[in-house]
Length: 277
Image (tube, rainbow, N blue to C red):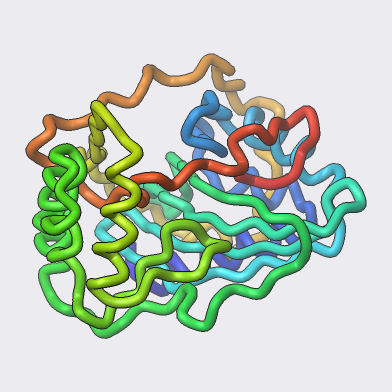
């Protein structure tokens, strides 16, 4: 997938969310797509499952404003931050999260996973939010080596090794609504405190690449046309969730959250829909 295609898909996703447009949202996904709106929840499966989720999730949302960060594109996989303010069931809230997307050959998403946090009130993102720096080259290799080192440091509760993975002038934001820890010394102070509260930690980072998509079909990306709900003849996907995620061996890995980061939105349930996260 080219970066321009990823940006176009994300823009269509933004419009669908802001407009509570369930047919447009469902049309961005393959017929057998999986949509995991929270790491610890079952996935919504197929366009019908996704459409049902969106109907419920957006029912109580008003004045939705979605902002998207620069996407990271690696072949048919894309990651992008998002920052959303809204009135949810009448209450002002801010949601900050990250989409992890895998695309099919026709440009539709076949797998969505996201992590997110929620805070009361309407908040703007920090000044450094959502922007990518210059391409350092060999991003995949750098990311894998960095994450392998971070996994080892976290498992060994070695804050010095963790801090050594950061640039001297880094910003380490352990949760979207907290102030960042500044510089390598700030990271060291934070990880010392975090690791001191943990025991028997077993971080596992997912780096297994899904299979690449098949040949692209003709006709351009689906969001170049108005995406609609699939016809009634389309097969209905099974609502059962996929098998549990199987992490790779401990010697491989990719990015992980901060050691003591807690999913503050984890208690939010669709019985009181708040977000697509």
